[in-house]
Image 1 (cartoon, helix red, strand yellow):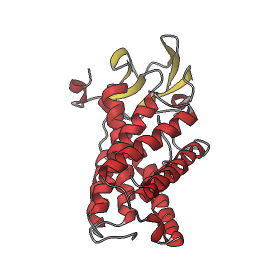
Image 2 (cartoon, one colour):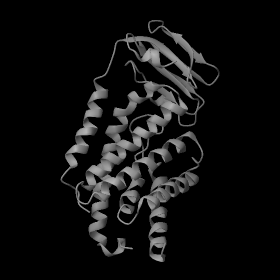
Image 3 (tube, one colour):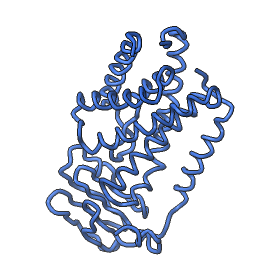
Image 4 (tube, chains in turn red, cyan):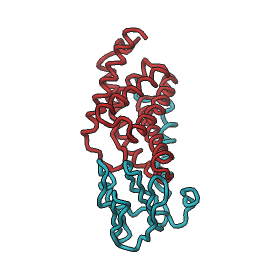
Length: 170
Length: 115
């Protein structure tokens, strides 16, 4: 870990945690348990460029933990669902991102959202409500998750265009 | 950082198959079942209109083959905001109370798995 990496990490984690809090103020259209827009995943998409697998794991755990400490959701069932979904989806997103140029950011973002929601529902089905029928809610999660995933990908591309390449190099 | 790549279509196809596969998987409505922490708490006929209570933390109403939660002790009240449900398989879930209300499908194999 060099100084530049520490600075970038703390910047993005702070950004992500603040987005995590602001996200709770935005009304969520569908009344489903644990539902949230997922705009704080903008920072995960930005972090993909300079992270390896260990870094992204570290990053997603910290982002979600600090964000949920500040919103008062830490160590609740919603936190368990959120963090497990985020870990799996960020690892898969990084795997897709490392295949140079084969997958665009839009598809990586949508896949990340889909995987995130799927893992959350699996956790809910097996550990919390203990019933497989919860998985039938998946289409609702998928549609709403895709909307915010498209927005995330566009925002990240705009940010990247404005800032230039140099900031994101370690 | 590019928005599109060569093999994007593969990912989109996987996701859309999942979506449509789940949307068109529906059955005829059967009984209403209430689960607490994964255990079956009660079974009610969909045709009996009444207001029912689950322990002391949740109450729900059955009316005209539809179900809704009227009152709950959870902080978010997501189960109340879900409103009426009448589709088998789509549950009302209250995560803080670990409660799930679902209209079972009449002739599905799911009954064997969910115990």
